[in-house]
Image (cartoon, rainbow, N blue to C red):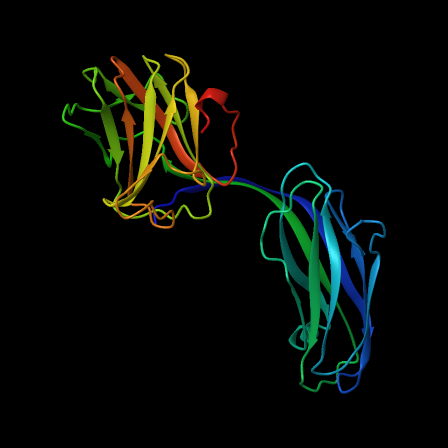
Length: 309
């Protein structure tokens, strides 16, 4: 898979579910209880209206081989989307972890700011007999801000790039004018006709979990630029946009979920299997540069409204 995954991951919320002071024999039913501690960015409630914050969970009596479920409501009180994760620890005695299991129904979707998400925890008890008569463990639910994107091309190298079209000319690196890294890619004097460039590394990309294709473009013209992504030569999708001003870097954003302007003979590109993409620029009459090509789940930069699809 073609991937250069970059991102900043910041843990911003933590809720600790302490299943503690649990006494009993596994051969019989035993009481299970514990506390819930929420941070400034994650709060846990008994209802979706978020009226009663949970301070403890009483699981009741749970017998050997049995399980019991409790539904709680997790609220993101921060100002960024959070992805939740769950872990257990502090088992006492350590062998208690062999006989108890805690699972949840969280599916991995980001929890948006002020969103309330129902989550069901299920406590399962082993059928095995044990002499453990008292046990304790903690469960941690962590909210993580993940700004994740996949860089498709940093444009610091001409590897896997080539010009396309009848008026083929050489591409070159511009090490003086770029958005990030060490260079941008430039084509000069493209003869005033429709020109293009193709990026085609040897493997395929999976863009199925991404919503936006993004590229920074700068040109000595105001005109149309087309992005065309391919699964193969007969399955492709095309989007077009207009540069709003000349000689200014503009961040172009293509919404991959929007309807393409045109598709291939056998239908649109399969976003889970992208082989290459083309950038086609119509009658630029001068030069064009591009840099920092990526796909993202959410737009992470300030956009130029005229350039947004």
